[in-house]
Image (cartoon, rainbow, N blue to C red):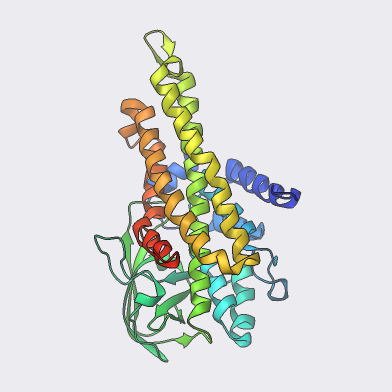
Length: 363
């Protein structure tokens, strides 16, 4: 049995890495990070042309019909290269309609999402809280369902530039809201990760279209979201390790490169040995999503809670490895540090999912 990625999956990642190197190298990422725009539509359109809008959309709706693992492998590279784009929210919007929509809803929206004609996003969180819960989980949603919605949602990815938003509703339901509908207001929420801007959503008797299915299918959407966040975090953590190693090879102190110092060697080795084995954790969670569904929920929660926590620690270690410059805005490490904060918090902090794992395990 082959436990490695296929040639097609390797090609997918190689193509994305080449795209990032040509279209969004580090200096371009920094320019976007420092700017005010939430989204570079030119970069997103080129990603759409590569098929990133519909990797997991079934082929009968204009997508590639691939599995969650393929989507996660793309997320890994985007996390590694920090390309500012709406991949996460757009992908989750497509998965939501695929999992929970009626056949008419799928036919109406999935081709438009796959082609990039419509930019999708999701609105799940209902509040910010110290414990990291924040109303992210489907069982915590309180927005009353119906043909109209009134209430608020927080942390909508690239919300101010989206065309269609999938909103979490009470009873673990979902509803579609078109941007521009009466009573809908989106305001820039900023967010520390400037490669993935966020918005706050306000709804006042706003027309919506509930998706046909609720409950367990929405739980599947949560599993997919956790896997994609874990994959993004793995890519970012890997990049933190490689940046630190490269810096250690070039930065000189006392007449030698700092990579000669035993303490730093140990730190870099610890970072690498923490990160690399976790690749299998998100691979397995993505594989289980499509092939071992009875294990999917727990595997996704494990991947999200462990890898995003690990990313946060490796980002801290990377700052330390870069010394004084690592604490400055001019050092690219800060971009990954802030992406780590996003991945850790989005859809619930690690503690939330560890508690879910404990409950699933009967502890």
